[in-house]
Amino acid sequence: MTREPGPDADAGNVADPDPAEHDITRRLRAQNAELSQLAGGLAHEIRNPLSTLSLNLDLLEEDFQGAESPRDRRIKQRVGRLKREVQRLYDVLENFLRFARVQELKSAPADLNALVEELCDFYEPQASTLGIVVRTYFSPDLPRPVIDADLFKQAVLNLMLNAEHAMAEGGELIMTTRRDGRWIVLDVIDTGTGMPEDVQTRIFDPFYSTRPGGSGLGLPTTRKIVEAHGGTIEVDSVPGKGSRFSLRLPVPPPSDADR
Image (cartoon, rainbow, N blue to C red):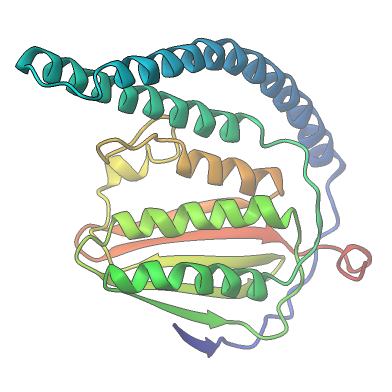
């Protein structure tokens, strides 16, 4: 992984919080909490029969473990396919719960450069096997955003995996941090296939995916996490050249950043 210092941080002024924005945020979080509770109840109702189905398929598979006749071998293959489908449904359910439960944040000032570097170190072995070179360009003296570090890592990792899927033939994954006025910006850039305009307008829609077998919840979850932090996410993509996802987090007031 290549690490290089970024440009000097912008001085930028921190705008005073807007009371109306805080009120809207509070109401949205209350609505999200209610939806999360409903989603948890629904997931419980779905998970129980899935567990029963999975257990019975395991028992059925054991009955055909020593299958010899063509008929028994076919049954065993079908049981295997059913087990894989049940696992896929489990995965969809877990992805949905992660999407629905983004609400209450355990926030604290964080070193964004260190957080991104830790993720890149974790991901680099996988990247190297896929022919992907990871490069980082960190802005020095970057303000410390107030974030839920675990949730934000999930958001960034989703973008890194999205970039991986766009670079089946290898390429470069570039992570940069910078300050832009009242915003702290993280850019996640890939040199992959890029996206046409019609795809860019839909990639944050829940359950929309251009990848076979994709849940369509990774990028919507990332957006939900970023927006829960009072931030925004934008995408700029050129087919055949690659994509840039820009995550913007508000620069905190000095009292918050110094905690």
